[in-house]
Length: 361
Ligand code: ATP
Image 1: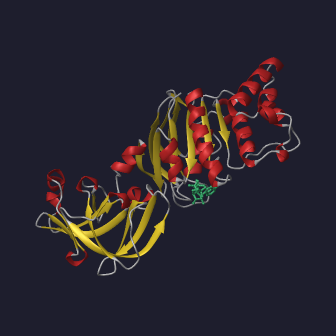
Image 2: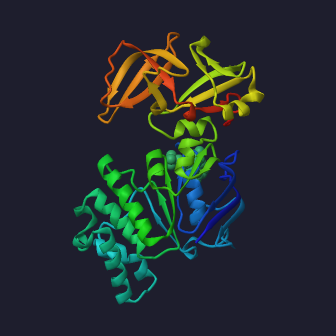
């Protein structure tokens, strides 16, 4: 099923401002759409509007071209998985999973087949007759997924379903969710503030800030062509370096001339209108050339070295005190207080209009 949001807005009663405004979004059939953004940006509000748990103040919500604004939640053919698994503690795993179908007065043999099918896929068959209190957090989360799956909904809605799990289990469940989505092919909408979850699971990411969509697209578009400085800084770890400077005779100059960048021919064209104006350069920590013997280079003193195994993260300072974060392969040797030359990978430089924050190249 495809889900379309046309100019959706939300104003909570008693609030002066709109929490969400002008939300336009198309989620295709079988998409795994991740709604991403910082705390308070309106992700849950949006998900609850799609679920029918929050009213829609303005705009249209369409499921397969049918307007859903006034359709009650129970008639929307959706299933929700929450951060708190909300399992019934006095019921077995089996009964928890069977509950919604029993309420619908589904036939016993159909309920049994569906529960067993979901339990098989989620590998929880051996816990079917345990109580939620007797299984681990990860297993409980799977039961919550199973409970949603047995309903065979047209859309899965998930609100931070992995945030209660420890890091290792989260990593594992990410892969499981991708596998599950591949097997079921159900349109899924997943809310998180974790950019790694978005980058690894989504077929489509929607990044929000302050009640507005900042960018919507595929994960690689977010990494390679962030639409503005907010998106550039939100995606990627460590965070992209943003260097404020200006265009002087076709070159980008920053930090009193300590950094000069000659744009590629194509970028130079896009930058023509910015001659003499403030421009910000974005460069990801992993896109510096260490050693930097060719092209534009700069010198920086290393203050802190973080050894993460496969990579080393260098926190370096330019002569004027500005910080640059550089990621290098873990086996490269760097020591604190050493001065090094670094170069830029010209293909990986993002130019932004400093005033609006919008992408230029
Ligand atoms: P988080 O990641 O912290 O859950 P979020 O992005 O999901 O945040 P929402 O929970 O949608 O954000 O909240 C967005 C804004 O709407 C916040 O300013 C919040 O205070 C406000 N809000 C949420 N629910 C209500 C409500 N029932 N009544 C009034 N304001 C609300």
